[in-house]
Length: 329
Image 1: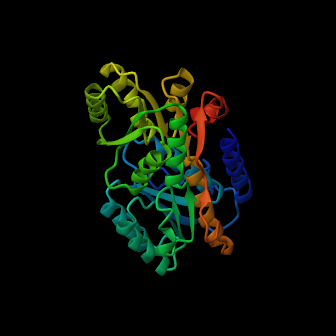
Image 2: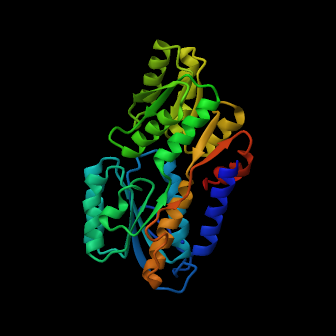
Image 3: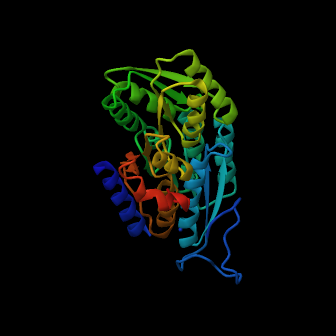
């Protein structure tokens, strides 16, 4: 609870201190009168946000919502694009460079594939920040700031929590093979789980029906599994049915939240989640680029800005329930 309160306080302070036109497929919001919808009297900048979000993944809806709110406030045209395949994501970054945007925010789940494209943006004089994935590598490519959580630390805290809960056999479900952030999370779970074992299960996160059948088959095969650790809310929610259909007694926890996940915690179907505040990541990334164009500010300097991790469970879920329902947490 102390960690949750600390991260929440940092998020609120940052949002207030840093003080976002929006985008839906790159089109700015309108005030209904054909004028600017921004809350500042500064030139209209164009910012590209390029992520590895897969279609239908609600986590990225929260990142995008935060980015849109910051863009609205800062009189920015936000051009959001995403692709879960690293080479395609790198191409999207190159397209943003070719379009001569005023700033780029990028995730780097595979830094070796995406980092060189980000470096080209930096070399072209485009302010570039990182978010969500790539915390350990962003400085190698000249990226000025990073907003997110240390995935190894988050995983270790999850493992320690599971250890205290008496977990003996944890199934850590990776839904994007090749994503270093997810590997780090499961590696951290293993390190924190002193009194039990951790096993990785790879699933196709783009197909939740396949996820359910794969998790269900594993649980049916191995009744010793007493915890399922999802790395994203949709996988955890899908695992609820998998556990039930397999006749398993396994409990479920996850990284990341959405409105459905928050309700599942309230209902007792999910035991806890580790929140990295994706809305805040999107908001701060765009707002930092406005500040970079406005007065050359660099948020965080040579240190990342942490937006997590924090635990959400039955003891504090009501504190974020309303915001989650509005798509803000």
